[in-house]
Image 1 (cartoon, rainbow, N blue to C red):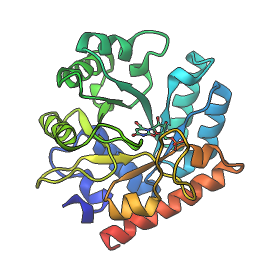
Image 2 (cartoon, helix red, strand yellow):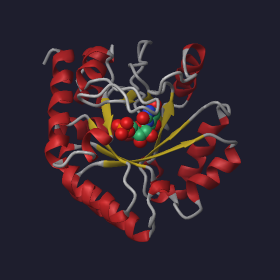
Image 3 (cartoon, protein in one colour):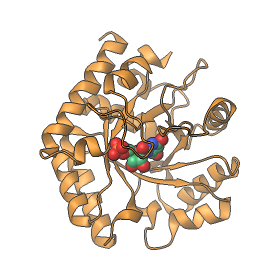
Image 4 (tube, rainbow, N blue to C red):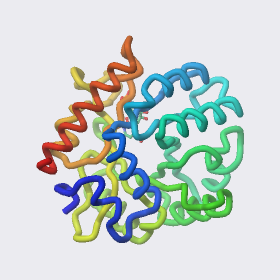
Length: 267
Ligand code: 6AU
């Protein structure tokens, strides 16, 4: 199973989405399985954070709709820093509507997400057409179309969420039908259960020294999610951007998550 395989090995397994392969190689080369969640409110803060933590991350996660002055300057800045520091950009838009609407939300409006985000995520409660609709929109909007990929929200970190049991199982079923476009899941444990599964699991709700935020968020440590639950990438927001020295804090999370991974694969 993927739980004992290295990122490098997994990059060349069959049926791995092109973006997943690229990401797995990038993780191995930079030795980082850390994604920083840049939940800040201005372009200046976003770009500054990207510069500060860029060397320690494989991916920067955004919520573009909370940036007050989001615009072409944000997009150009993000692209430039991502290319310079070698990380992917993940817009955490959590699409959840009929196919026709999500295509517009993905490609149009003030955010034009398809233009700058390598990775997006979606809920599948509207049914599987959300996957094909987003895939088609990515294909039509970007040349070459290989640089866009989807994470399905299979589990959440918040207390009392309803994404359990057969809902989570159905997410895996739908992902297996679309391995070209679906690179993996947002989940709290690895969902690679069948032989041949090579999905990337990204896990939010990670902070050292905190158990929750008083608003439903629940935190685990890097060791718990990477080492014990077998997930691939930790997503850390306030744990990093809330620190005085963000660069040092990102590096601390990188080292802990990387060691947890090495321990898991027996490196
Ligand atoms: O580390 P935090 O708590 O400051 O931030 C966690 C980030 C936030 C959430 O919107 C997001 O991760 N998130 C998600 C994602 C990534 O989709 C799913 C989830 O279950 N929990 C969660 O916190 O930007």
